[in-house]
Length: 509
Image (cartoon, rainbow, N blue to C red):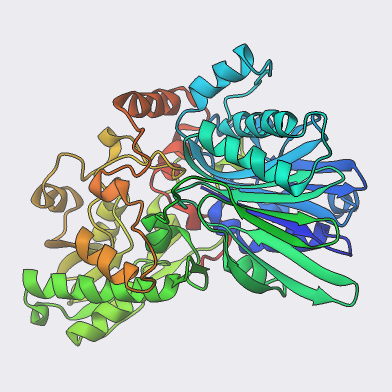
């Protein structure tokens, strides 16, 4: 999971891209990168770390130009500790292409060999983004061979890319001297939208992972990029669009609505905030059918993304909603101290309980999801230590039983608390007096009702159904092997596997 942005403007874009990346920081905090173009010359700066740490004044001065793109990275393929795998990626032929990517290619390994044997292109990292940019470069070369590079040739190349690569991908690329290209996989798994603002000198166009990046930088959302669609913005700011895939269907990632996206974003016509309110409503119905609400004294969310669901649930069952945990927003990530055996940062360093909200009460804790279960276990114990009489736990998402192969760093099956375990076994593990999970079908129904044009959802981590139809047991084995070979800070791997993006210094949502 990453955040990506691209801009074509009449004025310097370095600050615009920086501001947009800050708004997308929740999508990745391991690395950040920006490329700008002046004429046909590229200027790049990328490094591990958060946006505000990677880009200093001297770095920003070294990024001139009115065209550019950027990315914040949360690695799901390749090596999280290799600075060479930070995006953007660059190839010098044909034309000169720079690319950022959000998602995960499920056939990257076979493509890498194909690129070497057939396309005569060398891949130097384990990143699937390097594979993707080389496939795009090859197809652009084939489409435009002995011809001027027009939008028709660009769209033809994207169509060929769709036929070769599998998995999930939202892509923004710059073609030196031509313009900005963005496209989305034929299933629409990873989000991508675009918008513009009219200036005295002409249109200023931005493409980004979430609508909040557009609105927060003064642009008006036009619409989402359709699954399989390509958007090309020429240097004059004119937008060209074309459907480049056969039989595209819209199946956005459900985990975006559960956890990943900011609540103030709108994705594929669905308000993330409203989706979470709706999940809270169905969770309340699930709770009422499981236990008497009069056994609950207070509903307390586990910050941040569970708040809308917890509020709606509390309203539905007629119980008070209270903030029982305070988050320390200044607990840094351990990667800023490379090579040191940094002690694991306890949940208690990131959250602190307000004892008055727990003492002598039966509390219902609401979280957005339960992945490994280790954090939930510690939070339940924190509530007991704060004086709670009984501690119930509710998850706004269904049990996470299966790995994700489409760009979320979901643990392998063995690491998932719900994999091959009953609800009762999970309850015993986390130490709660009762455990209530969201229902998969109900969740899909209430979120899907917000946009009837959706074909469905990519919800494989909940239901085990992989929409691309090409995921095999070998893919899961490859994920497990990759995680074991990552190396680096062991504690950082543990922290990452809970998807605890908000443990960084930025506030989520």
